[in-house]
Amino acid sequence: MARKKQQIEEEINHHKLRGITPQQMEEIEKQFAQYDTNGNKVLDPNEFKACLYSLGLDSDMINIKRIMTKHGGDEKNINYDGFKEFMIAQLGDTDTKDEILLGFKLINRGGDTATVKYLNDVLSDADVAYIQQHAPAASGGIDYTTLTNQLFSR
Image 1 (cartoon, rainbow, N blue to C red):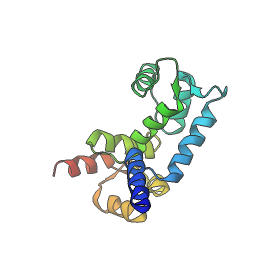
Image 2 (tube, helix red, strand yellow):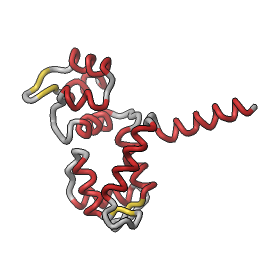
Image 3 (cartoon, one colour):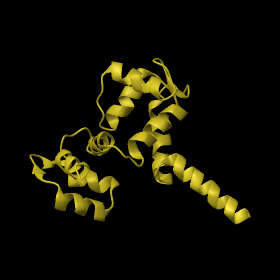
Image 4 (cartoon, rainbow, N blue to C red):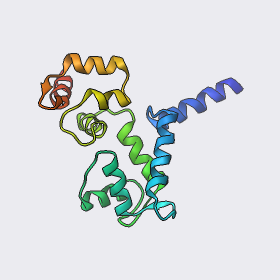
């Protein structure tokens, strides 16, 4: 029974994290702490914007406040739980074409094309090889938009 309970707890935690590794969770915690510049355990819109920018997501203040509100905060602050939920949504297992495209954009620091260097930072060698083999070349890298559209048209 104890072993079964532990397995169920691990399954629940894995489901909550949607594929995020313990290392990625640690990085999310570090990211929050780094941008909580005044140490008040919440990110204000400017701190949150700076954090997203460091991840390659450049967004206007209207969208920043929308994201903050959507993920359990308000237009003035987002706490760690909301930030964690947002990051899990960005980095975790995804199902929609828009989420895949946003993930590629995040991995590639906001770029419209993928670079092998950035892909290697977060993906397995097999995944990078697949992308290189199936995605068309583009000016400055790999055309991840066309690849994603092709995969979702099947």
